[in-house]
Length: 431
Image (cartoon, rainbow, N blue to C red; front, side, top):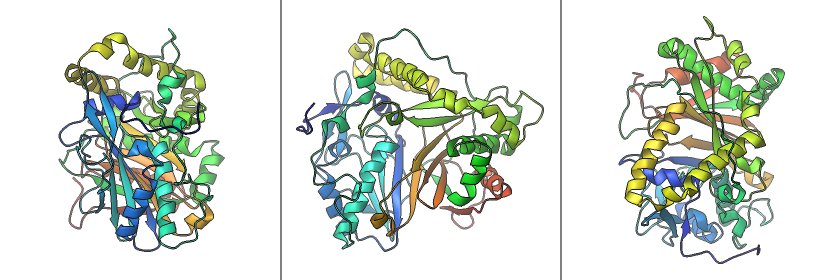
């Protein structure tokens, strides 16, 4: 395969992206945010210039969705008038089908800039690579001493063919073995507020949380999963009484399992949890014990490959491919709810450490990642870290904060220092 290639005039959605244009509603599509809080105010003109400089290096991000006869597809877009001052709540629905601009949003406000990406374009791992390159180029334009070989992708290079590959199809193999069926999960249903996203973020020093997780022989993701599950159990009476398991949907990057450089979607989800009826009362330690080893088992190469083949095989099925798009949308949307939304209580995505070179990191105060929600989930959780802190952000279309409160109180009881911030306005009380 050649090192570089000519970007085509259009390309198909990857396997994971296929569902999102179909599952969208009038007020929602699956959009997430990655951003940085800098030490100085953001200059919007330089941010626009930096975006223009990296556009050709990351062509798969500067696209809009188009409606074909049998499938949606992506068309590259040149208009970069998408840098705006932030004035509304995060992760609003992006116009996927804009005739003039890419399905991407770049926002700034004082020292913060962020990029909001619809999931039909990329996942968190792919988007983080692009946003870090944008950060580096912006700092260069702002006069900071950022070398081209700082470890982030050089914007002056040509895109690599492997970066635009649909790795699901690349690593798909025909096989008869299927993953075990997934059970229906307990659903968290607080009062919903339309056109609204409440964000609650906790900042925890890594020197506080990592030793506590390590002492229990847990990874950071294992620990966060246990704390999130316990927060539902402790905060919501309906969860404790449920005959259905409380389950979180853990995002698992397949780039750790396959030799893939793709900047498009290449992740799957494992729905993991425990049954609150398994015993009369669960402590936090009980939940951690019940979950021990489940994530390691779920993310093995064998189990992930079963899921990859199941999803890819369904999309590549000849009967599915020949169904007209207007009918396929209804089928995929129903399937998204039945096979996806009902099998989990809430998503949890840990992007891990966003490694920044020292010359870049010295100009950054914090990093953020926010999930814009899903069709029926009223609370979501995303985590990301830098060299000093873990940032855990809850987002959702409800004013209820019972689960978030319990989660952060648990961390404090565990001996951690936690700083909590929110976009809640004064006088806006918990429901």
